[in-house]
Image 1 (cartoon, rainbow, N blue to C red):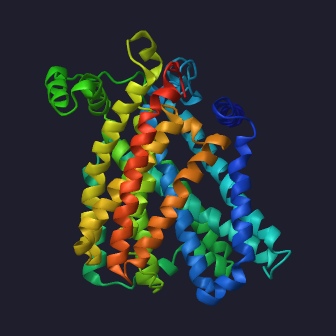
Image 2 (cartoon, rainbow, N blue to C red; image 1 turned 120 degrees about the horizontal axis):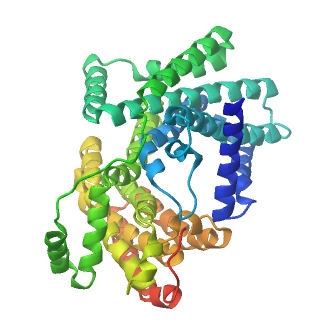
Image 3 (cartoon, rainbow, N blue to C red; image 1 turned 180 degrees about the vertical axis):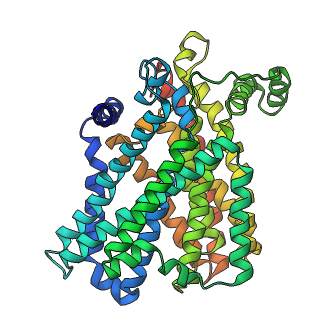
Length: 482
């Protein structure tokens, strides 16, 4: 009974936390967008079926939801940091074990259930509702949609349960065993030359959708329950925050950064040390890199398994780096609580610019090796130089736009309707043009290169204009929570 009450409180906490950052209507806004999106997809289903087989669409949908669940389960990796992190005067129920006689494992398990139910009812269910509405206009069976909801939920449960188990394993014993296991699996699949399409088509939730087998449902639920139990026992009990020891190296770090950017050297050194000492450098890079890896894996799946040649070149991946870099800036603007800066002789534009410098450095550190790896895998390493130009110009522009519009409050401001509209109008047309140029490069590389270079110069010029206006927009603003 007590667990049910805590679970209800956690849902209320989620609602109030989001409402305090944005507004109460936002809690349902993402679900409404999902309904609209799947409604449009449902209405266009007859045209889609002329290009792609319905079985391939279902295959891609189930694996997308599986990976989506895997990504959501990443909260297990940040569980300890969630406990240590406070949003000003706000602390999460997950951290109640510090002051109340309740085990952290129990709270973590309830948090796990809360997140699972939240994403099923506010993501997967709206997807199905959009298709249900579309079924009034096109031929879609309501029975098949009911089964689709069950199978997609099963795929999500498999993804989140396996992810939480994997990450709790990593938190307890480190990353090396996980990396070795993933590497061994990759080598096995490569050496044995197994039928990848056959393996992906054998995904139990997908098989269940086609067969309507209750036995498969029970088997999947049993596997999910087993993963949850293993995760429960692997989760650490943390009676108090960790005590971390670090050597004094601020002067050396500040000396190095001051040589590169004299004006911002001290605060840049402080941010670098924050990332390293808090061990947040891995989550920051991981959060930026994972969508890029997933993008490559998904496109590889479409081209190599479903056998649809959509001609995604290295240039396309360079454009996507520019889009996903918003995640990187969002993390960097949120690694510390900026309220403490109010007692220091620092202005908001100054701190924003220091975050941008670190953003550009980490963006290059992650994106360049990623593009080199993709170029080698796709046999397009000859496109590396133009891809680097594309990545740098798009990333510079997108980072400048995000910094100008949201300052240090990206996590909340970027979800404000007005600012999100401004961001969309300023960024999406650029991404569309650069994406079209990446496809046009196959037909006329000279004209495409000329256009990419010209547009890149315009983006850099626009970035300098936005950075020059930071003072007008943010000077005099108080540092605060989100």
